[in-house]
Image (cartoon, rainbow over all chains, first blue to last red; front, side):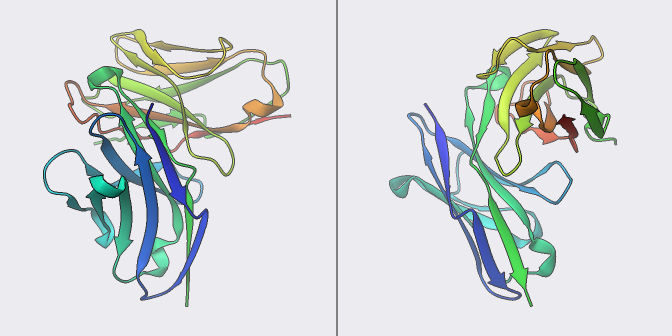
Length: 115
Length: 114
């Protein structure tokens, strides 16, 4: 079975500081990994994804994530936080292939950005 | 290009009632998945529809059922509502023959059961 663990339900950073949101996965096969962001009272927006190839993945809004197979991790980073980054972030792993696949989500990390 | 749309945005029901939620996928998408997101939790997979058939199902009781129409839109039905069914219900669509199955999410329907 595949699963995702997000360490830290709440993370607070100052504006301009580094953002690091942690995600570890368990998978018996090479995973497809995703980070989604959810702003208050909205649905989920895809930030970035890892499928195959380059292990450092760049996404929208200056975010990036690195797939580390040896550590079974897919941590999300951003060099400099902005107030508009305050939201809930979800890491997800894809189970199955094609139309039979589904996403398994972590419990989420709420990012707070302070002045 | 319209994204994934869901209706209604909010819904209040009482225990024992039945509810129907609706989803229109993004243009060009043919697969629809439904997720339940309880307060403070990550989304949980309910089921997925493709070619008007349920293809995969998560760990949800039979009270949860769905349908997909020829135009790829979908409905989620929940019977005999329980207080614990209160949640944000998210619909996600994905395009045909997508190896990576990138799913695009709608804004959700917030269901409150009193």
